[in-house]
Each structure stands twice: as structure tokens, then as C-alpha cells.
Image 1 (cartoon, one colour):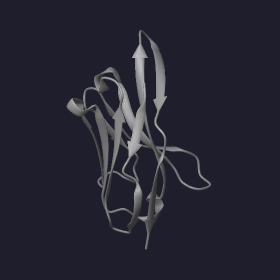
Image 2: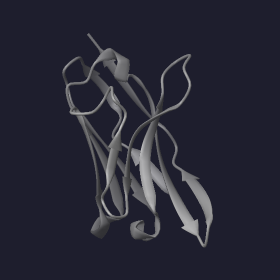
Image 3: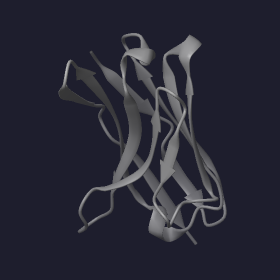
Image 4: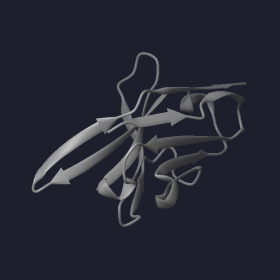
Length: 118
């Protein structure tokens, strides 16, 4: 199973980016998918996640600005990021969790850099 993240880049404050995470298998096989980010000198934090029933959760700092979604037909998860600010700078990682019987298995994509500057 592979997760391939893309869409990062450099934008100015107030700009937008859309990250994509393409999975090499049926995206519906993941119980949960989401995005983490890691800013320089900080711990990795959960940004947003979406369940296979389309339930979503966001960290407080991005709620109302970011939207996570899944396109089952394309086996792709997205993170639409609007009104970006400098605190959104970091490396963004997509991940997925499969629960087999009762055991969770984590899968991670490589990171994609997001840089927001004024």
C-alpha cells in the first residue's frame, strides 16, 4: 500500500493550496484518513481527518479554513486550504488507518512542503 502526497508549494498569506493524497489501493479500505503537519522545531500535529463514512474532524486552528474530502472514484484524499497564514507552514503528511479485525495498521505518505510567507 502506498500513499503519494502532492500539491504543496509556496504561497503568500491569504492564499490557497489543495493537497492531494493518492492511494494505491481501494480508498474505502481505510477506516480513517487524514493529514498531519510538522512545523520547524515543533511536533507533528493532526490537522484533519475523514472517516470512511465521511465524518470529519479538524484541529481548532484550521477549522473553517481547511476542508478535507475523499474522492472514492479516484482513490484520492484532498485537503483544501484557504486563508493560509504563516502558522500553516510545515511539511504535510497524509496517512491512513486500516482496522483489520481489531488491529489498526497505519500507512504514511511522504511529506509535501507548504510555505506561507507575507
